[in-house]
Image 1 (tube, rainbow, N blue to C red):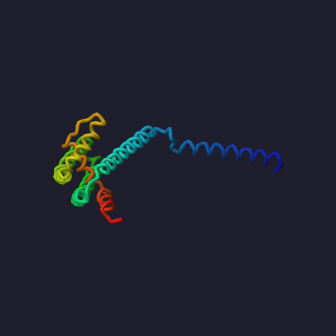
Image 2 (tube, helix red, strand yellow; image 1 turned 135 degrees about the vertical axis):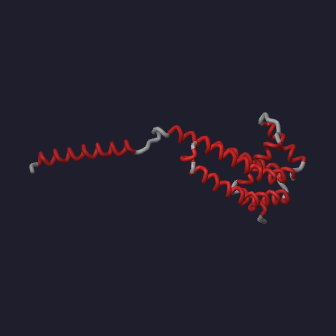
Length: 180
């Protein structure tokens, strides 16, 4: 082969490598792909939820719960843990069957499961809320008024029930109760 043929073959190889590289990059999902909007929306929702969790923790810290109140909350969180775990398993089972059951049927099953679990968790939360002192209740009402809302005890009890059902609640309360 002559020098000219080698140069032509080298140029052809470089062009072919460039075309293959461009095709490979086109196949990769990009930030501007068809699901980019959904990914950004999901990230925004997670940031929003994290903010709510942090504000709930800040409120709990500002209430300055006594050790007896923390112990009561810890006991109720431990009692709620098996209920929450079973609920997660049941929900996963329902979601696995959603292809055969249909969207509306799945939604109704999940709604019924949530209602059933709320009935089990709400008495635990009511005991925790009942243990709050008048000063602590005033602080909660003050925080609600700061955000332009009226304090709704039933809504607060539902939020406490959800908090008790979270996996990390018991661990956080144990850490607060442990001697330093």
